[in-house]
Length: 322
Image (tube, rainbow, N blue to C red; front, side, top):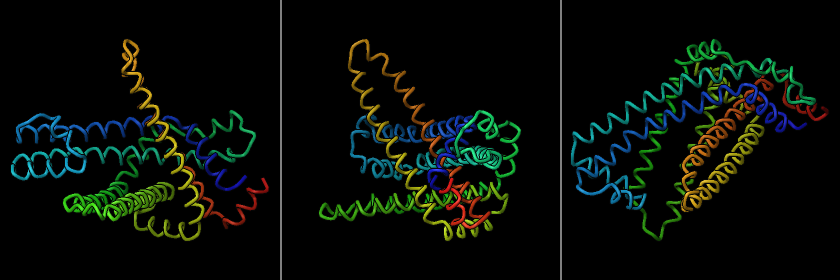
């Protein structure tokens, strides 16, 4: 069995054995996005009231023009702008704290499960081995959340700082649109920003894993992540690419399902079932994305543990012979 296949298979099995963390992550993520949408939607209606019009007038504008229009209207009303920014900041900070707390418990559970799972990725798979990989308990989750919360807040603050800087750079592009003849430059810059955020998210995940696995500080975790990337860059890149492909395929399937449900909505009587079906599809999509993300987390964790234990070449030779 190749290292990539073994890592991904171990990630799938360990995550499935601890399915509770998938549910917790999904609920926390959905709650965070819902809370964040409240001040944003409120900001849209606030802009409409200040400008005098209908919400549909703002939503009918090109996507590229919505943010500049909202900003222009709010800048003319400093009190409204301050209230909007305050509401978004409060929700963003509060929701981020919730996510850091939940992620600490999730990582603690998966670290414990990965350590006790044994060679679960090698057949035959039996029920006792699967049960041995189940490490979830409310006590362990709560203890991990409390123990890692402070360090995850530090990591999250750095992540939010990078997000803020990237957002500011994106706004510069929005407010200074390039001529139509240079649309290729704009597209290239957009792809560069997306690639940058993707790399930042990968490094952020690796830092969370190292902090949770070794119970170390952030500075020490940075040094260990750098060492991991130097020793196992190819393996990390392959796992990342495999995860990215799964996410893209899942997104494509989700778009097709949404389009199909949209067609059903126009059918008389049958269209009444479209809303619950869309809700179910949204839940399934969210759970699948969380499962893929946690599977990748366990795969990186296995790679990090192997890199600490013995030379990767020896491990690969053993796994190929198995």
